[in-house]
Structure formats: structure tokens, C-alpha cells
Amino acid sequence: MQAIAVFPKSREVRSIDVLEPVLESPTQVLLRMLDVGVCGTDREICAFEYGTPPAGSDHLIIGHESLARVIAVGSQVRTLRVGELVVPMVRRPCPHDHCTACRASRQDFCFTGDFSERGIGGAHGFMTELVVEEERYLNPVPAELRDVAILVEPLTIAEKALIQLWHLQERLPWQCPHRPGKDHGHCRRALVLGAGPVGLLGAMALRARDFETIVYAREAAPNDKSAVVDAIGATYVSSKDVPPAEIAARFGAIDVVYEAAGASKVAFDTMQALGANSIFVFTGVPGRKGPVEIDTDLVMRNLVLRNQMVLGTVNAGRDAFEAAIRDVAEFGRRWPAALRALISGRNAPERYRELLLGRPTGIKHVISFAEN
Ligand SMILES: [Zn+2]
Ligand SMILES: [Zn+2]
Image (cartoon, rainbow, N blue to C red; front, side):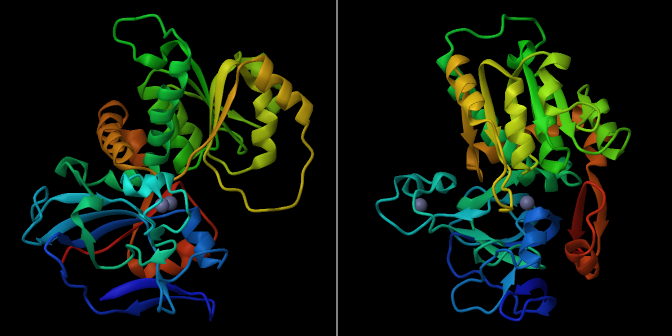
């Protein structure tokens, strides 16, 4: 069967022919991959910035954002049936007894760093026709989400951030006053940095909870991304029109920044817009480009004098996957056209080269494998 793989030693990205996997334990599930998303991480792996083959292999099959159909189950699989749709989780636990996070099935908080991630490091990914996976790493998805469930994995980043946000903001012994028909966020203002798939999905998650939501990105409006932002009742702002230092004056103090751009200078400059008791959530992983100047006295003064919090978050646990599946369904009810507009194209696997190595276009490109 076909798989798309990187060969780090020879610096090649190739379509290869591999043996079909088979069930090796009664708790495993055989999956036919339907959709595999392409993101910045895949492009960085294909540029050999990172990505580690499994031990003993000269190549890594890439792909971590996926949607699959169950085509066979082991005799002890209890929760999944043949024909069902699933979204696999990405990270697998480290082997160490002392890693309390991994031992509690929360490898997204792994202490040791010795976890593996399918399609990223230490384990083959999903950009192939068939995959075998343990039942416990699979999340069932309702059949009606067939066309949009490829967005679940990139949405889990925002869902994990929001789960933590509600926990952390319980430090404040009050909430938004109750307003009939309005969700928890209705008296709060959120700023999303970046209008890529992670940013736009994060903006949808914030709007679904009734945050006033501003999406701040480089590109001037109107464009494909600002159209999505308009459709969900958020406000698109280009950094060409409003510099970071003017955000608070223009829109009011920000309660939550959800950073999804990976540009550290703009992110730190945006911290000035944070109001009292606010929280800044980093999700981007910037490439190292050398030191830049920031006013650390100002950042530290504001953190202290305004009771602010800074949070970094990566990967996602089962709770975030389940929330993402519920939310993708909710976004589809509220904003069907905007949700579909996030998927710029479904492509045959033969187009892997231009998608992974060419200039990025659109919002989210998907590689789709034929069902039979
Ligand atoms: Zn990704
Ligand atoms: Zn661990």
C-alpha cells in the first residue's frame, strides 16, 4: 500500500510502497485512513527541521491530523464497531514509571519528553492507506461529521486551552452575570493571534462560548480568512491597520489572548493589550531566529500589577478530543459554510509534493485516500 514518508538521512520526501499492517493484539483496531490534514508541522518535517523515524527505521511516515474508518477490530475491543468513524490521538506515553502524567494517561503533560507522536517523532503517522492502532487512542466520531471531522485534531489545541482557561480563571470568585441564551464568555473579550486553521478554529470555539472575539493577523482584509471571521460574528483586524500597542485603545482591554501564530515579537508586543485578571495562552512554536528586543520591565510590571497569567499549552488529551468532536458538530450547526470554507481542498495523495513542499495556499489542505 501507499504511504508518504520522509527520509531524514538522504533528505528525501517520497511516496513509498509498504506492507499492509495487521492486528497484532486483541485490543487493536484496523483503520482505513480517509482524510489526512496537512499543516505547518508536516511542512517543517518535510524541510527536515524535525521529525524522527521510529527506532530502527530510515524513514518516517508523516501525517498526524486524520480521520479514519474502522474496518476490523480485535476480539477485546469494546467501544468501537466496524464501519464507525474515528479520529486518532497523536501522542503516545513515555515508558517511565516516574512519569505520573503518562501513567495517568495524560501524555499531553508528559514530564520526561520521551513520548512519541505518530507522524512527528518516534512513530509512523497516518498519511497512508491502512493503520493499526490501540482502541484507547481512538475517538469515535458521529457519521454526519464525515466531511469536517478532519478539523477535530487542529481544534483540540484550542479545546485544551479552553479547558485549562476555565480551571485557571476559577481563581476569580465571580463569573459573567447570567444572561439567558448566553454562554460563559459573554462578558469577556478575546484576541486570537493568527488566522491559520488553529487560529480560526480557536476563534470559532471562543465565539461558540459567546466571547467577543477579535482575530488579529498580518494579511489585509478582505481575504478568505477574514470572510470566515465575519461569518462567525468575530472582528478581523490586520496588523497593517492597527499596531499591537493600539489594540487596547481601539477595542478595549483584552481578557484572553489565544496565540496561534508562532511569531514571538508580535505576541509579546500584544501583551500590552491585556487587561486586569487576564490570561495569555501561547500555542505557537516559533523557529529560533535570534534575540529580539522587548520591554521586560513593562511586561513584568503588568503581569504583577494586573494579576495576569501566561500559559503555554501543547498537544491534547481525550477530554479535549471529545470537546473538539462536540464543537465541530456545533460549528456545523451555527456556521456550516464558514466551517466548510476552512477546508481549502481535498487532494489525491499523488499531490503530496506540492502540498508539502510547495508554497502554502488556502486555509487547510487535506489529502484523501480512496475508500476501496
Ligand atoms: Zn497539525
Ligand atoms: Zn511521560
